[in-house]
Image: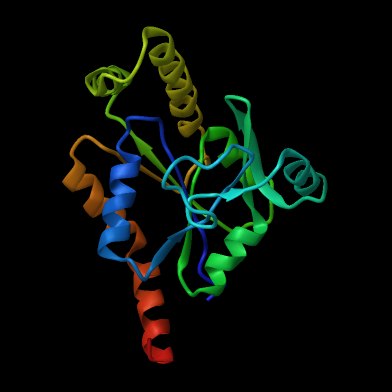
Length: 201
């Protein structure tokens, strides 16, 4: 099942990427699994080791970086986060399609590795519509909103470059976008089901 190529998802906050992935995992729980990231931050209430994150101390994380244990890693709000090769291999060994949800820099870094992934970008109809979605959440300050929009603009510009992604889904209508996503992944889903059928799962 390691022949199944991992799927790398990316898209600005507010693009609807998480909603699409939740739908996909709900409809096909045996076909897809997230790669569990490592982090140096402490667990939040209700979070579980190995399910939400692998929680490690900074020296352990830094040692993994030095040893080339990550496909990509970054720092946010004083904490380190990374996608480890081990986590991806663990999902592939389970016979499911490894799914990664990363930001633009993560995409660029993974492209430098030998991970034979497919890249899907979830795009809002426009930067203006994205701003409306983020404002409607009511969770952003003007400062954080500007930061998210700047990051989104960078991601949208990168998505315009030839070869940056294998597929771009414009999420103007959630149902339409989800059907397009299923169409893109239909061959992968069929391959997983056939393999599980042969194994008697």
